[in-house]
Length: 248
Image 1 (cartoon, rainbow, N blue to C red):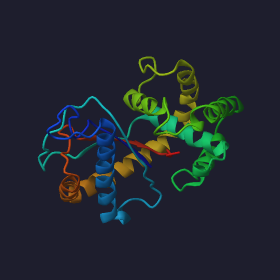
Image 2 (cartoon, rainbow, N blue to C red):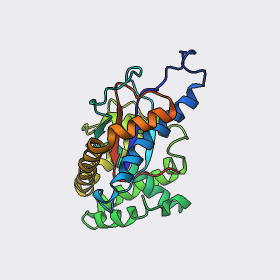
Image 3 (tube, rainbow, N blue to C red):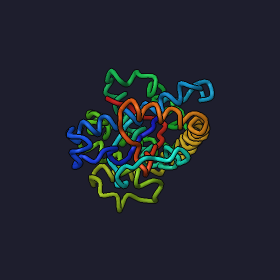
């Protein structure tokens, strides 16, 4: 399971009286702070999360408003589990890295992706199997050769696909036309054999995580924000769930 965390910078970079650190450093601190909140909440009650769940954390800028002190009663995170385009993209990415035999393709978060793929392929017609294999090959030759977090255009692509949610097409997504074509061809097949299972796993994880946040979130948040001396954004952090992803 992957949680893509997005949110505004917790400290306004232009406010020198607050901080003179470059925006990149502030963004890294924001990532660490938001990631730690989720990790610590998970560690407080790990058995309540299904044993097959896996978590990777990413942070990216969004259009949320500047930060303010967050009332304890306000939700810390906003969870999104219905984004089929994002899930398709990450599935193809980790399958492409498996084809390329990268070292990270053996990580626990993604090692079972090829078996998941094979199970789904068995339910497809030969023509559909060919379309899917071509999509994996396109990723193996392109996006899967790059770092998911640091190499352009992947961070922006991930954000764009999260915003596309479960739309019927990528017509308004403003992503590379060639890659959009690959995703568009693969999408009906993904929705036919994999998305229902991946979506259900996302929702299961979200339900369990929301309960943990409800139980422990305010205490963990107070500890982390005090440790980093940074405010939590008033708009909260968006957490986008995906069945597979990997940090190259």
